[in-house]
Image (tube, rainbow, N blue to C red; front, side, top):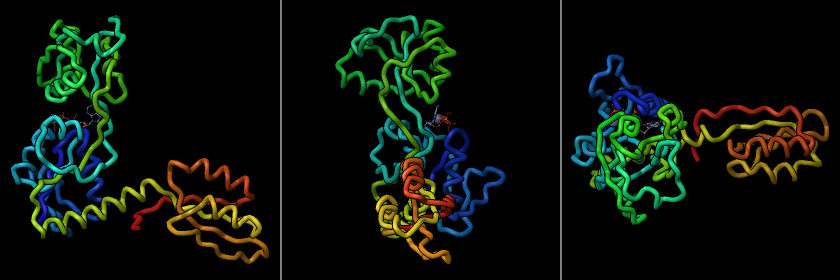
Length: 283
Ligand code: ATP
Ligand code: ZN
């Protein structure tokens, strides 16, 4: 049985549970117990505060965990980062009152910086050779400059609206973060097999989210040109249509190139283009 720690409630909870669900793992946590066992995969799930997850995985209470990279790096535990999950994106940034001048990182020298990320802030200051004071607090960091507790803050930002409403401006980004899957360094052979199975499923879900299935009709004289821009997993599937001189083409397109590919297809006389979401994708 593999034991996984996920956030009990908060910004990573929904996506973590959704990911397991899309991996075909059914959880029975309707009433939000602290732990639950999956019905159809040898997985036990622990619901914890995100800050505690690195420690629990390090201590072997859980074998793996889903946590923000920011928390993983701040806690500085010797764990393996096994997969970048692509959700919970945010950045850890230094911000100062918006009316203050700021030209370069040197302007942080001598300031008092409030943060819950003392370790990462210290690392950043050391790397840049800046002598500043770190004031570690446990929450509501964004109000610290306004109440005279600090000159600057180092905190998580996504849209920047919290900074804005507190009269602050972002001046340095010290980390770009997303949710990651971490694992203990001494996983048994049996658990490693289970982790590999889980990773195969996570990968299939992630690939499916990033790709679309595309079907279109095209005149035969364009087939070669169209095949060249639609690599698919190997090469596109081409089926002749009942109408002479025409074929149906099927392939997979990455979300990132999607609109560009559609424009090229139109230029190559493609018609009746259908785009379909993919449920799972196994390479
Ligand atoms: P807990 O009760 O588990 O300690 P928390 O209040 O510390 O929860 P959340 O605010 O739920 O934590 O954030 C969890 C994680 O979500 C963060 O560590 C970070 O990785 C990610 N995250 C994404 N966007 C943001 C954001 N705008 N602000 C804060 N965290 C964010
Ligand atoms: Zn937390």
